[in-house]
Image (cartoon, rainbow, N blue to C red):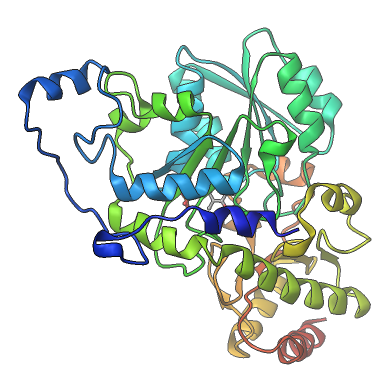
Length: 396
Ligand SMILES: *Cc1c(COP(=O)(O)O)cnc(C)c1O
């Protein structure tokens, strides 16, 4: 049953004069006919009125409705980037500081935020192995307010047991926050107890590598709190989403599920060919993946296992040589980020995961020869495989 596709579609905003797409509302500020009403907005007694676009904007709100529907949650707020989503959501959850238990294998920027910025703000973070639920449990402290993980970890594509972690968070009265950037539509974390879901919309949700954006999805009260005029992290630190970007993302959400299925099909084809040819490959859709069964239980099968593949070239030199050849052969582009219509390649050890110290990288099995591939859906799968295989044989 194509539930995700259906719920996204059924959120519908008409443009003025009955347009089939919503208008882009670019107004920075809104007029009040009665001055007394403006005071009421500041005092929180006139909900639903637009005041100033950093507080709320109709186009950003329309996007929020679609994102919330996709996640099966009450509300969502578009923000300026994935990092803005993560930092605002977590600081709003821990207003007086406190403790986070987090998966160790997370996005490099998030890791650096947790390690280098949060301590300045009275927030301590303990990192644990993502596939060891008992390690999360052992790390819980009396002031643990948040349990944090990514559905599919970066760049090693480990799968978190969201159900077990959600249960653990609940038992300890902590909020369960999930970064679902690698698996929109594929996995719905709220089904497994996520209280807040964060996204870098820069990746699959945009799909065009032409903008930076993020989103926070959660309960109505929490999302409302984020834009509270006197206490909201998003409102008062200011990383809000622009209406033009919200409008682009609104339109792109309708075809996100189709794009995810296309990414998954291309990645699944390549991963199977790679495994057959003896390439050390990690892909959750392969039976050899340690959490293949878990992923199968959590995912909506119609969108597949996602578009990310990681291979191990063993050494940094071989990974670099392969990347250069793959780019020459037009297999992919050597660039950070993911979720683009074309294939993007990167070697995370010295780049996107370079924030993570070498010893820690070794602990996570992040070898210097790791190459992460965000498989695009453009081109013919068979041609793409031939190009990859030719380059792989050259460097082996
Ligand atoms: C890219 C990314 C982020 C950060 O998002 P930006 O939009 O670049 O700020 C966070 N988490 C994950 C998993 C990402 O891939």
